[in-house]
Image (cartoon, rainbow, N blue to C red):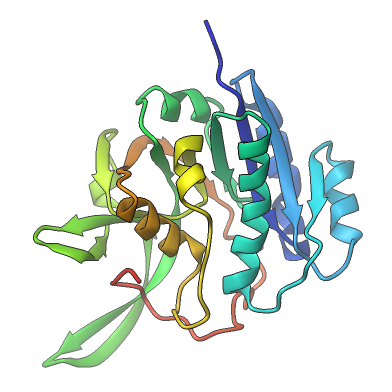
Length: 250
């Protein structure tokens, strides 16, 4: 049985020290045999790179610090993209450092033989309740970082609810975060990671949109439930720009 070569990785920075031991431990426990894990440190200083290496994980220091996180994240993620394309990897498991997947995540996502397959992890969203077009209340709601297609409208999409991904199934999606998604090299050959400072969103939104425009279909395996380590996460990590709930793709 052959095991295609997989690169596991993500951009990271010193504020994620709190979840590094859990991430490193889980990556070492993953049951898939032919894998390499790399974190790209885009902190302002070198200290966190050394901290990562002490956990037995390969670390690369992003040579350029970019203040705007919308541009900083894809700059670091493209270092990993280049590693995939130049290193004869067949897949990239984008696994962000605060996301802890099941031990069989790679083989489970790979078995579908699709170019882009996401697992499921959750985050809190600010939901506006409106009456006659006016916002009357805002609530935080825990939802999966997955978007579904609104039939008949190509550019619009709705975030899926927790109830929609509760049962294990394999479904088409319009958007996924980059926290736990298996991406085939064919996608990365055509689609780099990017973002623009004119749009209130990070590179995950752009990647989903650009991949779809390039003709690739996105899927999610809802049996792959990941732990998102929100507890202990420093607040204000991405306060460098004003965010709003994204209900349209760029």
